[in-house]
Length: 155
Image (cartoon, rainbow, N blue to C red):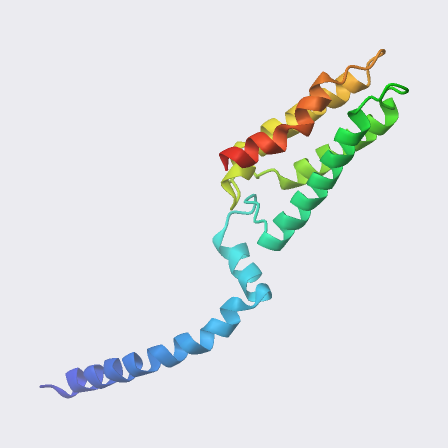
């Protein structure tokens, strides 16, 4: 066996021994959110929307709160009609939250953000326009209020 071959074999064995140690050292770095974000900047296309689980839950919670407000605003009791500006404002906030959750051109890490959110945002926009009419029409706003149930049942 030649000297170069022995050296090559020796280096290979030492590297194989160091590999588990190196991997164990990288695990804490990989769990660090800053490290993960830096890796995503390099590995994902610029227009890919990465939404963390915490961010998704927070935005979905905000969306749920606004949808509950919309349902309450649309419930017409015997002594009042829905307040048009209140419904419009709530639909505006719902549209803003939904737009923030839409996938970019390269996609998103949550499939429903790609599949369902663009349609939801369009429906919210149409409902808002209908609520702005004179007289206001709230049918589409009512459908928006029930949209979460449809999506979450499928997902």
